[in-house]
Image (tube, rainbow, N blue to C red; front, top):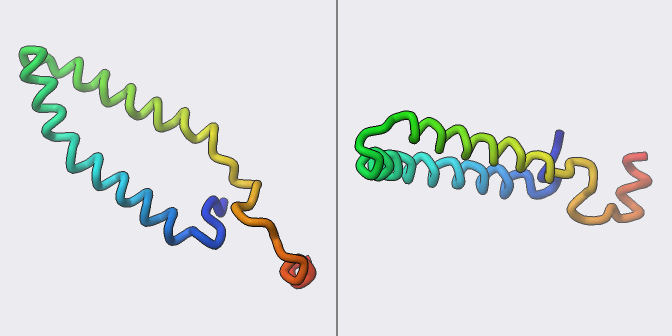
Length: 80
């Protein structure tokens, strides 16, 4: 599945950046949740599960078929 097409490098970089930002912010957020809920680890796991479910649901809006830019006639003849 080629989601990025010609922009696959930019897409890959954006995905890695988002992953690194979340890995940087997760420990302080978990510490805040634990402090706020009196060390209730169950809540932190529920929050994590909700974030994963939102991420899984976001894949329904990915359209891997529609190209980001229209194919030029010369490219269409070369590939078809």
